[in-house]
Length: 271
Image (cartoon, rainbow, N blue to C red):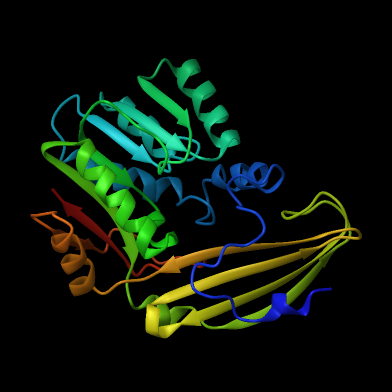
């Protein structure tokens, strides 16, 4: 085994595989997305409904919405049912396949695209661009700035970017830790016996957490990393102002307390 794997990685150092594109793990993630009674991959259905209702109050009738990181379409479907036209983009092909079939069966006005939202080029503008479940915080500062530049091109005049991030109180809830788990058959990370070494790293100076999973099977090992950048209100406001956004306001209290992450989430609305 390569014991270098146990060293603390550099901020946003990638793992061997991306959980959203790994052929096996991405299928298991879809299963987690569809569990409507927990907050693991997606928020609870009751929370999603509350969030969509709040969003809808800020949108014009029959709005055009771009949903970045749409997953299996849990938000997109509810927006479409309210009469909005939605384009959803996600890198997980399993989620997009599920969402597309669902939209077809329900006759909803949703277009789904299986692509990285860093790579996609769209020749239209939207009343709103949304990024939900703190997706903005999973990217390096460079990638975050890249997507913020792209989003500005996609917004109509007076169009809104709406997204959420964890607040700095996440650091009070999440702690550095290390654990291991053996699975003697099919599990979340592999379809054969495997050992999972899990570790949480905190980079206080960067307001950043890394959740690392080393998955060891008989003949292979893989490293997966998920990153989470948290922000203060002043920091996220200044960041957006510096990148050309205006009318920045923050809403807290939309997300109830839960066991998986934290209820300390803020939603940001800007133009």
